[in-house]
Length: 291
Image (cartoon, rainbow, N blue to C red; front, side):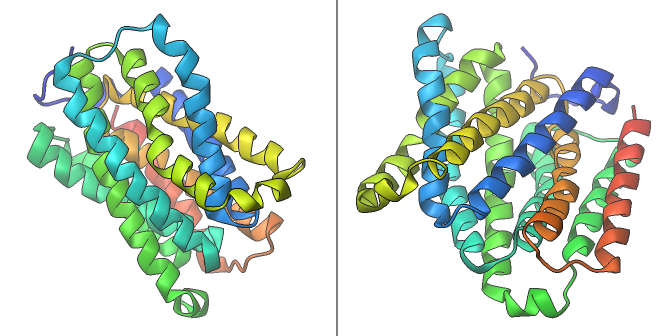
C-alpha cells in the first residue's frame, strides 16, 4: 500500500505508459459512441450500466475494499453522477471535438493542484512542465474561435465536467491506495457507479427503450465495455503512479476524439487544431522524458 507521501516521476514505467495510452484510445472511442448515438443521456445510461452488469457477478471473486477506502469510493460514485449529467448536457448541442477536449483539458492542472494539496504529491519541474504542455495543447485544440462561441453553453458544461474529472481522479487515486489491492476497488466502484445515474435515466426514458433495438443498443453496450476497460486500466496505473501524470497522459485521448469528431462526425477542424494536437504529442514525449 502506498501512502500519501511524495511520488517521483520515475514511477512512470514503460508498462504504465503503454497501459494509460491504451486507456486513452478506449476512452475516446466510447465517448464517440455516446455522442453519435442520438440522446446522450440514454446512451450513456446504457454505457455505464453495462459496466455495472459486468462487475456485479465478479464481486464474490475479490475482497471488498477496506473501511479506509469506502469514503473515497463513495465520493467518486457521487462525483461521477455530476460528471455524467454535465457530459450529456455538453454533448446535446456541442461538438465531440469541442466538448471532449475542453472537459479533459482542464482536468490535469486541477489534479496536479489537488494532488499536491491533498495527497502530498510533489512533482519535479520537468513533470510539471509536461502537465502544463499537455494541458495547454488540449485547450488550444479547441481554441476560442467561431465554433466555440456558437457553443458557449456546451463549453461551460465541459468546464464543469472537467472539474468533476479532477475530483473523481483524486478520489480514486486516494481510494485505490487506501484499498491496497486495486482490483477489489475497481470492481466495487464500477458495480456501484452506474446505478445512481443509469437507473433513473432508464426509468424516466423507459418509453424510448424500444427505439434502441440493434443497431442502437449494440454500440451502447460496446461503449460500456470500452468504458470499464479504460478506467480500470487508469485506476490500476494510479496505484503506483502520481495522479497528475496519469491524468495528463490519459488526456492524449483528445487527439483521437478530435480526429473522430472531424473525420467521422463531420465537425469543423482547422490548422490551429492540428498544431495544437502536435503540441499535445510533444507534451507526451516530455512526460516520458521525465522518467
